[in-house]
Length: 433
Image (cartoon, one colour):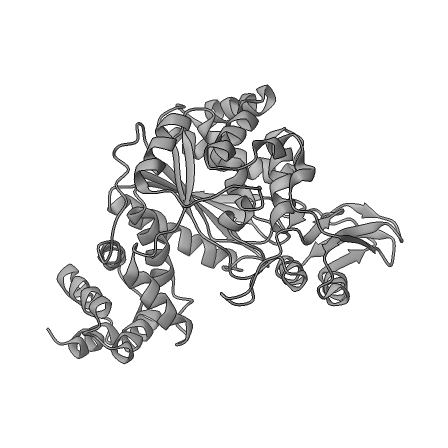
């Protein structure tokens, strides 16, 4: 079959067969189909979309373009969690030990961050000695022994997706629901998950800023997962303001520890309990979300969740004593308060701008080559709906000297104060099954 004929077919609104999609992805992966033809196909998909069958076939073609992880050696149902990203999104650091503590095996592959703050791996590497360089045999052994392990994403998984994403990024075709959904789901499926819980963000700090777009993406990913034999559930959550209070790597680890102790921010706690309840039901350790939530809350109050976090850190070379002595985590040299210029109520906090402010301090990567400062970042002292008096601190900056004045200006630009109290948006705004 000729690639130009497939491009024309999709351009004219036709449906590609599984055989055609497989040939397209195989040819692009091995280089026999050039970038310019795949660019044309991506643009055709951008405008014409894909049917549910096409989306599932594209996902599996990308799964089979590289290695897949075999987790069959791990006892139980392996449930993976994926977030579409946001600001202050510390959920994995809390969620993984929390659900592992009630018997849900967590075999997690995570990445480094590019943008506002580090990824899960960067955050965990704030813990002295922690490492993710373990082979698959050790990985499976640790999950069977402790219920939990986290390693870095393999470059050998879904090479077609990596290549296609790089092309989309420079051809104006990133914002295509079928291409986003197949990209995310191909990585989750190749990573060996039996079931998948998706946290799809919406709002200012999310990739999908409009609720309608987030709902469409969630439905698309759930449909793909279920079509290819992975039980999949999506939770739609608000990212119109940062999640929790901390933005920055070591600061977010501190916040995760507080949350596992039962004294973390209400919104981060609630999101972890919601996602964790779905994971527990999919894994078969609870019959419904209410039973699952009760188990998770009991694990926090009893200290089991925190103990699991310590075991996890120690098993991968980390200093588990940080859970009791968080001052051992990297700490910035300087702290600056950002005082409110007027009294009133916090009406909005532009999450994306707050993330940029943290990146200016060195908490994130502007490019792949950027070096992260694990110690720096921002801690919010007020959230939407809270009262603030003139002179009270809106946020605390943790800095080592990088772009502090710019970060302060960005914070002031991000936080709006009104005379009337504003009710925060609901955190959980929907579910798709």
